[in-house]
Image 1 (cartoon, rainbow over the protein chains, first blue to last red):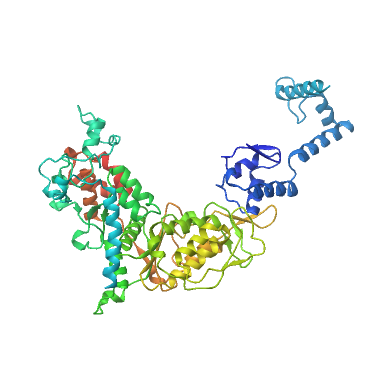
Image 2 (image 1 turned 90 degrees about the vertical axis):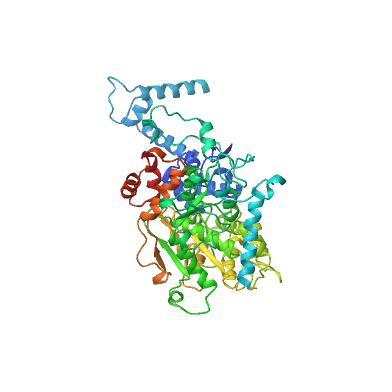
Length: 125
Length: 454
């Protein structure tokens, strides 16, 4: 088992699929990174050399927002909404849906995620 | 004289494979060991070779007959291959084609076959096929062997014409004739789907190798443009594929190793180095010199050992093979003119597909405007659409359209399927096999699929 930018990759998986496990890299960006490195679609992770894996990490981090930078950016945006007391910020705080969904019924997923985040924070304390 | 020497060397390789594939028979049977099916009338002690444990035939035709059950023992009994000596269960009386003609031609190689033996089957063992075609057997041929449970291939008139064409080139007759004027050194095999292009090419390679020719056979041209790593060559505008190049060199070495050790290199320029597979460029070195007195075998081994040199060696090999005049040389590429599936990065976020002619390996073997003998077979299964009318770097008259089965060939094929129990003997009539032929329009694979439904 190896890690690329914090994402676990199975040795037998193809590069075009394993590279999408990175946060911030989807199918399209995976193709762009592969084509710049000259890796075709059917190459597997265990066929890559260490230098190629390093190049892939470097290229992903340089030209795309990935992993912890992406998460940091998302968190910063949420905190900005909260600090400005925007409607979306309040909804984030309440753990309610914020894209116009109904709350009279349903909205379970959003509330479940908010509860789990609260439990994690309490656990950290 | 040289031709007879080459032929003897080639058949020696083939017969060695045959000898190595057969267990030594008991001394009492040595005198009688012959592949003459007509003589096998008395039961003899048999070896276990040739028995195949297989599943039963497809159930397309068997379901309607009441009281008929199939068992694995019946299958293994019915499908014993003929060996030397023949197993006692093998009935040569069933080897009958349409009109009572023999269904099989007993021959050691494809060279002595004539027009009289067209539309008959030649039967080689799988070991012999793998020995003569170590690069791989075409997919259509493998499917035919699996479905019919026998490694036999029909010799068609189109193959004999192709063989005679190259035979006239390598061995021109003393008296000029009209046939000599129409010889073609470069041929592109085209034709409808499942008309036998790949099998014809494989048979041609079989014949050429048994004649002692130096043949570069590529059974899957799509592997040249598929997979592996690809890098821009800094010295030219081409893309290098070191993994594919190394594989091509290894495949070329499989059958031709002994011959290549006798052929010296004739170009003494240093071999340019490129980027290795996953290891980048070699520092401080951009070319590699071959020592004096190197043979083509040494050149190929260098390309295999050093991934930086594999593409340069392959391109150099193409030129070296053109300069070989001692023996006839043939390039046989199946799935030629295949579409490419590699992308080149134009900017950080956009790509464009790379054309096949931009690859160093493909570019070296793509052009047919030369004096070497080359045959390319177009493949419908790996390409999109039909072959263009005007092909770049191909002579105008190089295209040869292979037809599908005609009525005589279809009759032979159906009798062969009958022999191999793909068709039930009780329900085989002329009307039914003709119906299959007309429904499938002579498509070989469709006929094979429809045969059990008689």
